[in-house]
Image 1 (cartoon, one colour):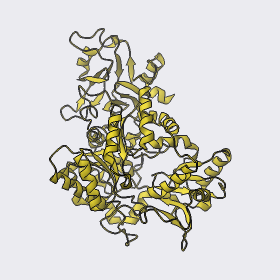
Image 2 (tube, helix red, strand yellow; image 1 turned 135 degrees about the vertical axis):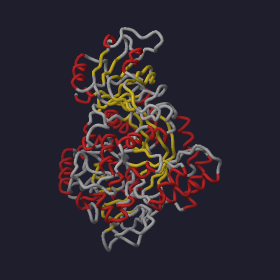
Image 3 (tube, one colour; image 1 turned 60 degrees about the horizontal axis):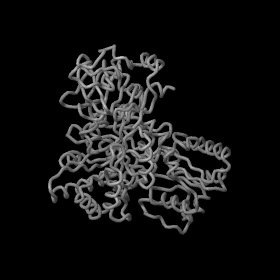
Image 4 (cartoon, rainbow, N blue to C red; image 1 turned 45 degrees about the horizontal axis):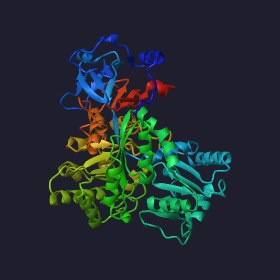
Length: 593
């Protein structure tokens, strides 16, 4: 794979000397030749705090890299043995060197949102959203399908967004907007008409996924809840020639989005449920062209009506198994979301005692999924939000482990928004990985809505537990869960680490702290969750996730030591350089330019 940036220039040396990294191609700064018994390095990192994320040797001063592999970890004085005439010596200037960040739960198809930035609606009140839509539509009179992303449901409460808001602006062509969390859709009357959705259309999964109706009527309002109903709209429109996605569009989005991830210090992602017929070929094409700056481990998203997933997944594994693109797990969703009463809860919702939420599989159905995957030695990655769904999954995994031969199982429950205290230690006992998203652990309008739905006591006791599970020995990793890479999305690991540390908004010590304050994570644990623990989930801990001799050179250079800066300044620590497989995928000079 070729490098992503040209050879180092004098301008870059001047820039980096001013901004925490000094780079010299001339080995005379250290030695003129490699020691006789040492291997010449392509890169040497020195004069900084190297946090290896290993128990044997957590700290070092210097690292040497050759042919994409780490060949030395140790002191500044000893690393000189690896410096030759072609070695690029990077002066960390008292900054920090970490393993490359691993995002353990992403949705790369969301990179397509970069193509719709003019209709990025996140964080705006309804009147501003509609003004943006009007400006966009007036500027794009020939666009067949108007797409937008990022609206926040809480901005449209209590009844959600309405088609009547869009119809005066877009009366003659379909308009489809997706919420920031990708769980909701907002469409105009023309979209409903073309999709054939009207008063006679049954909800695909009542109580789980449905079309919002006007009170006392069966007429759809244009507010669409959850996947099955959203897919009905998409599929019906696609059958009539309104394309939502294509391989070309997916590729274009990746070419814009993947460098953003590299610039944030990310070297590996787990893509949790991409459209495999489009995603894998596109990623393979980028890999073959040397244009893949991030390692992508993928999945097969399986639904109950998809039949037996084992053969399909095995076919994906056989076709995609390189170091940079590979199929790793089967993704399953066990419940819905906590802000629309579809998360499956042990106790009724506080604001609607008639419901516990909804589980997508009963015990027998989910147990069958777990047993089939276990027999095939395939790891599962399970979307799970409510405490009842978590208990259901843990029970199933415990049963299969007791019934079948002992082996190295690495099943993951992802999101884990609400967990009963009694179930926390069971993750360790059963050997199930806990994956969460730190940026969700602050009192956003969404979480205020969820607190009302759950009740204050339950919310405070069970929401987004980070430190307690780690204290109990649970294997925890972090993922951004970005469904879009639009401006304002929290996809940056340093943002997540800061919010995980403070449980407050970025850089704001006066922002309300999301309870429980004890769940503020420790820096070492937060870093581990974004590095070695993600590698463990992917069964790649022998290759990536820590800085050790023999591992792949996936590294990130930060301008400051995260252990030394204020918790409220972590997000502002600059990512100076990112390296994946020994190739530089991001330099601060390029980002600045």
